[in-house]
Length: 219
Ligand SMILES: Nc1ncnc2c1ncn2[C@@H]1O[C@H](COP(=O)(O)OP(=O)(O)OP(=O)(O)O)[C@@H](O)[C@H]1O
Ligand SMILES: O=C(O)c1ccc[n+]([C@@H]2O[C@H](COP(=O)([O-])O)[C@@H](O)[C@H]2O)c1
Image 1: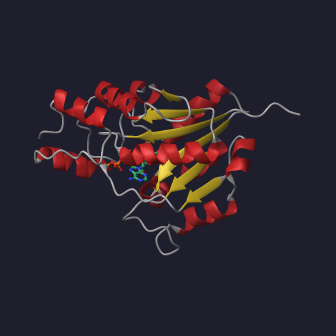
Image 2: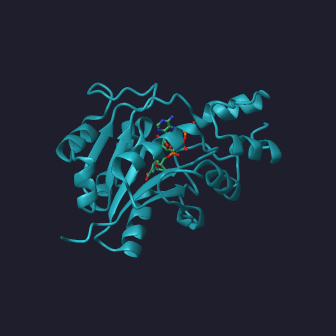
Image 3: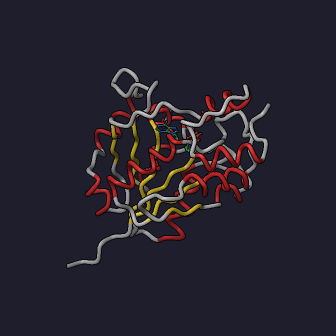
């Protein structure tokens, strides 16, 4: 019997702040893929967002608090924070391949909002040269033929694979999970905090305490 291939699930994001939707996305695919590791990639300079409020170190602190207790080892990769340029996933995947070699299975996780705009990412169709992509549904973002851009739908159909196939090859497959339905966004949380509300049901308690202690998202 061959030694099984190592698998790392990758979850990138602005995480400003991290919330229960991110934890649910990571947990969902941790249970589906059984990766050896879930690696979080806080973005340094997410070029499609208007700007971040919390500092990189604060976003990393909050990630550590939020992902404590998952059934797989969770690590935080600082490369996008340390790269002094716009954050492009293709650059990150190239770096990971250079560091980890060609054999390991890499699976990049995204929510439905990002699937609907995957065609706008830098060199989006080269992402599959380095990783698999798994997308999950999210309330407010419809994943049907009328909404998924044709080129993305075509690529996902052509590359459709099972979680088991993803574990057994290094890159190149696509998967869409349609049964995640967590109606939470960081935008909504920032707005609630700005209005003096406590969004207890939307973020892990440790993260909310951290936000209060550091007076984040108050204006
Ligand atoms: N509720 C959710 N359900 C599924 N996926 C999600 C959810 N929230 C975020 N994601 C995914 O997690 C990744 C990082 O998201 P991000 O940090 O931008 O959070 P966000 O809530 O979308 O932020 P914002 O409201 O500031 O745009 C993205 O791939 C996004 O699609
Ligand atoms: O590579 C790109 O051009 C690109 C464009 C938009 C988003 N991404 C990545 O998608 C992930 C989620 O992004 P966001 O903006 O929803 O936090 C995060 O890892 C981003 O770096 C990547």
